[in-house]
Length: 402
Ligand SMILES: *Cc1c(COP(=O)(O)O)cnc(C)c1O
Image (cartoon, rainbow, N blue to C red):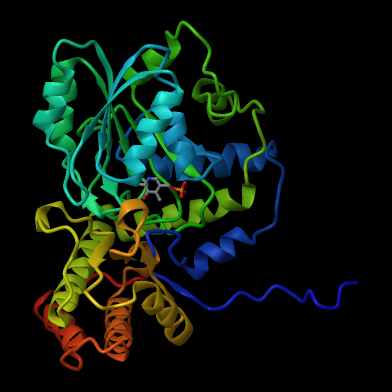
């Protein structure tokens, strides 16, 4: 017995990061339910079906291929790239941050001919640039990241859909940080391949990447000349387990699927539109608060801001890391810094899923004010909280998370 290693006792954090976000007690309870085997009749005929029914509702799709991949969100990017792409295929990838860059990198590793269509960090890629980049090429996929959470830019999916149609390409969309927090309509748009992550606005633990594949993309997968290089991420064989046959492919994280089922149930209990509205309202209250404090949102165009994660410019003379540490030590609140070229330049605050609640907006604004004024930043006392209160008073009550 090792005396130094005691029972696990995690601190009680409020996770206001771009993921993972804190999860609801109902989701914890579901996760600690009794294990069964991945071939158990109850699991394969009940739980898996229910997860797929709910997931189709959240994606707004009737796609046959709709299931959670056993992987983090990045596994969703991987699957969405390696399945449709074969050596030499043309891929146009919109790159405006870390995660869209990751998509381009993975497409390149799949030996596609990748044309990155870039925008400066903090902006969405101009659909006209995508159109121009595709001229005269036989483009197979247009890839875009809906909520680029490294910069907190939201891209207008419908506009890339139009361009993909003109180019005869399929549209692949990363909705890891937006599904359930911002409008996503897989069949309505339509999006040919769409994937997400469970630990963001869906309010479940990390470890699953839900994906859905439309008929046109499925046809591309079935008519491949070569096998998908990755055995684990081959969607057509994984579908043997999540499809009618339910034949063994790999052992999924059963407790994660329990948790995800409960999180999906909660999204549909509230209603998708109500969930989008709750995120929208709390985002606007937070923006009102930080602006009243004298902070600037990194994304200057309000129409391009994500409703789930907000990047804030770190003001001159403020130590960003030190502030994050104080938020954690003094208030048990975790916020994130910038990634890559934005390291040290921005903070990122995720208010999504279970954490998208009025009380958290007020709490994080108060904590920010305290930590900023401790570093000598002149904040009119209570200004951020007051602005958020004003916003809430003028807005009809947002749906409460029970
Ligand atoms: C978080 C995130 C990912 C990566 O998810 P992981 O679970 O960390 O692999 C991918 N894309 C976007 C847009 C994200 O926000």
